[in-house]
Image (cartoon, rainbow, N blue to C red; front, side, top):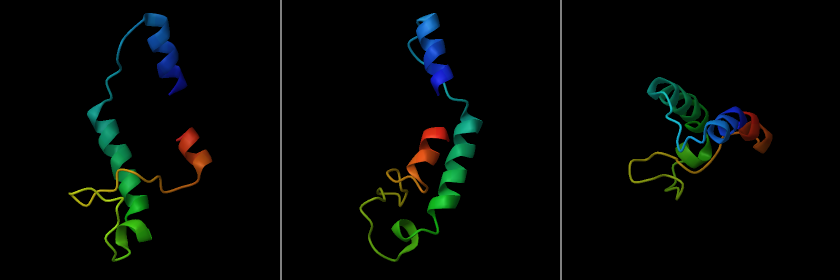
Length: 69
């Protein structure tokens, strides 16, 4: 991420596009980790789930993992 931010700064670009395949792969890995957790599969109506039943709020690991993911 830092490399992307440096590139934006260096080139004065205004945006970066994410490759769709990379985004799908990231989301798939995220769902694999989130799905068995109580927030997704606990049988309760979690406020973390959107109207489609997708958890778009929580990170399934430790905070340091999020920083380096």
